[in-house]
Structures are given as C-alpha cells and as structure tokens.
Amino acid sequence: MKRLIAPALIMSLLALAGCTNTSTYSGDVYRGDQAGTAQSVSYGTIQSVRPVQIQGGNGESILGSLGGAVIGGLLGNQVGGGSGRTLATAAGAIGGTVAGSKIQQATDRVDGYELEIRQDSGQNVVVVQKADRNWQVGQRVKLVASGSSVSVAPY
Image (cartoon, rainbow, N blue to C red):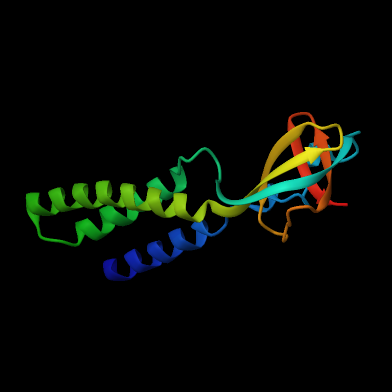
C-alpha cells in the first residue's frame, strides 16, 4: 500500500502546480476591483519589445515546499529500517522541500513582454505584461491605467 501512496502524491503535487492563475498578467484580463471604475486612457507608439519572464507570486512556493516535503518524507520512509529509516525520512523530507519549491517556482513563470511605449505626450513608459499578443515596434497602442496598474491594448 505504501508503494501506491507516493506516486499518487507526486501526481497530485504536479497537478496542483499547474493550477497557477497567470491570466492576471494579460492586458485582456481585469481584476474584479477594476470593473465599474473609471480608468485613465492614453495613447502611444511601441518603441521596443523585449521578451521577459514574469515570476508569479512573490517567488516563494509554500504549496510546492510542503508537498515536496511530504512526498520526500514518504519516499525516504520506504528505505531501510530503524534509525536508518528515520534518517532517510528526514533527508527525503528536506530534499523534497527543495525540489518541490523549485518545481512550483518553475510552474509559476509565464512568458511576458517588456513594452517601451512613447506616449503621445512625449513621455516614455515601460509596461510588462503576458506575451499573449504579437506586439510590433511602431504599433499604436492604448494604455489603460487604474491606480498603479497599467495595461496595454491594441489601438
């Protein structure tokens, strides 16, 4: 029975790791608090487009770390006996924590673009958002601002 639990937990962790919501980095998605509020609009022209990676959350991955620790501990517990099993369980939990954290961080990344835009006012701004469009240098765009949040949309 123990041999069936570890693979099931690994599959569960990987399934949860893929559940990160990266749509909020798109210029086509509004947060709930932005709906029904006045937002300022300006227009400009794209000066440069640079591919970047957007790291979700704050770079910490509690779910990945905890899941990895549990899975690593269970796998380590299947090794040896007595004090050797205890050491293997502890080592598995520590190794699983590190591995789970790295897996979660990798799944929290999304491709993005850093768009440098010269506004019609003459001011240059840089906006980073999800790479869900093909932006081109020289393309006219609309910048929609709500507080400190700015998104770029085709014009």
